[in-house]
Length: 303
Image (spheres, rainbow, N blue to C red):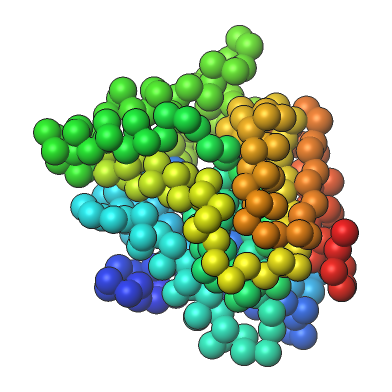
């Protein structure tokens, strides 16, 4: 595994990890979720290597050990830069592996960024996996308004307990008798404890970052923003049956409806019983790994 950094279009340093393998079938661009980091996906990347796929991960800006301010992207329009950052990573991959197709594996907030990315760049990718894909919330635009007010009063880097409790903090309410504030992410208690003890996990978003998140959620839900869609692009949507972040059956159906309404015709969905949000880290994660591998290995147009 090679560690390096590349420069984003605004000069921000993006931390990357490159997992190279000889005679790879494709390169998987790994896009992590909210309030975590790329290091948590090392075992998954190594699994891909063992099965003939190269992988490239990156830390979302405002995440990881080199971030100047954890949970902060930019004073203005950070949501635009989050999408542009992934385009920059894709460009790096194509230069580094010019003969190989680029696949995506995205988790949670990474799937929100990816869905916005696909609005204009769906032809840049060979296959896409969306894991723990959050659904659209009706209060999203109110969230944009509220975070804007708080940002004006307290500044872009202010962390609001109110906004956190109304968004991420609300997920644990779906867990009966939770032992920790993070039980909603996983049934696997080792995963939950590791998340809590990791200084680069669960650090909280600034009000400007929450505003950026809400802007992305609003955009991903708008089918009209999807342009030049690759109708045959294979998409695999994965979620735990007990994942509150995906909105249950209704929320998952809405996410599927938006993508199919945008023109994507090659979508497959898998739901895992007795799993929550972080399906790659559940005790029975081998099943998830294998389903992703099978999807990446399949040839032709899926149905």
